[in-house]
Image (cartoon, rainbow, N blue to C red; front, side):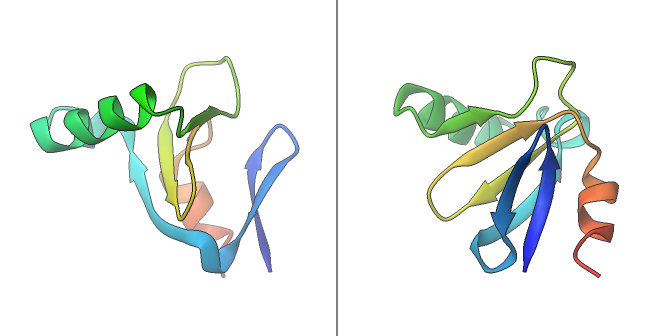
Length: 77
């Protein structure tokens, strides 16, 4: 089953490791270090150019999306 992340981007449900709210988690140093590492290694994909609300960690990439983490979680059901 696929989960839509917006802007015609979908990922396999089994590839998703975690879904995180950017506003709540970006204040944590380890999260910023992880996202910085991903950015430097071209492992981030921006789903939309709009204000990001969440990021989805998958087995190969981290997706930054303007869809809320709660909405993405609901799409799992």
